[in-house]
Length: 381
Image (cartoon, rainbow, N blue to C red; front, side, top):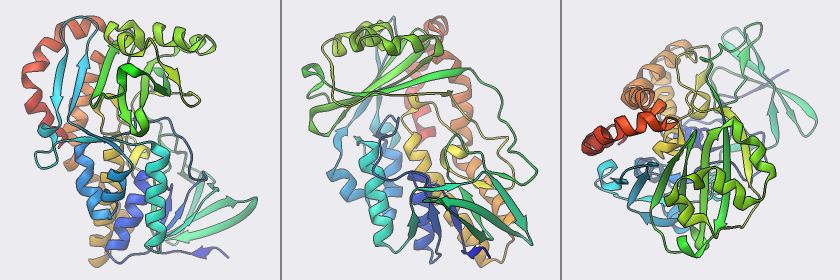
């Protein structure tokens, strides 16, 4: 017989833990299933923008996160291949907390998970959720492999926080595919270089077929994360300096800062679509974080959106249960609130995304973008 749980969260990273902790604040218990074993490294920009602080404070983890982070990061500077750089002030995003933080993703996830366990949230790591989910009598039945043993869980409320590669689907009905997009190569590495030792800014560099960011982390280390065309895959076999020179180093401002860089931990890579937008996700599950939408890293708000959507889902679930709503009503309410929260941001990103990979469009569009940056930034508050 399946084990009964009131709410099941598939995925124990930022979005899933945000949802579970927020549910706890509303007096609701959830079981979190996480396929990995923490701490674990993850390809990520590792930047917490000012739009994340309100959520972290409500979750009760802002103070320890600030203690383990680099900052304050007061500005984000963008460097096109040609033309002058332009700056986005963090105070445009959050006048009350006008800064961002740099924190290693494994540290952030571990802090959140430890806090969740202290709050009495049940978390099972190394739990592989099988993609096919059954639905019987209004409940979901999920099969999970935990340390080689198969277990079943039954729940009336299922939250999918399993990331951009989520394959969860109802039995006999595969998840609706999102619109096909160009495949991109994601590359992340951490470096030590005297040029960046005391740099307290998030710096974004555009280069042919891609863009990348450099930001400080604790201990005098910098995180470099970039997204580029798959054609650069052979460069991964070349010496590290050659890889930098042929990718982000094509931007002279980036090369000036990274020419003497040395790796401090193994490089990570992934191949994925550069952005997963909501639309095809209006299905039977309540999806949060990257399972619902994957943002282009250039915004610096990927981790913030994961935290925000986890909290949003919990608030909608709590309100729906108080009013006696069915799961499908709760899910529909979540989608409405989701688009109220992020709809304008999604529309801006759809318009701006082609510019990121086209030097020609950058030359045409960026001069018009600079004067309205303070106004556009309000959309990301």
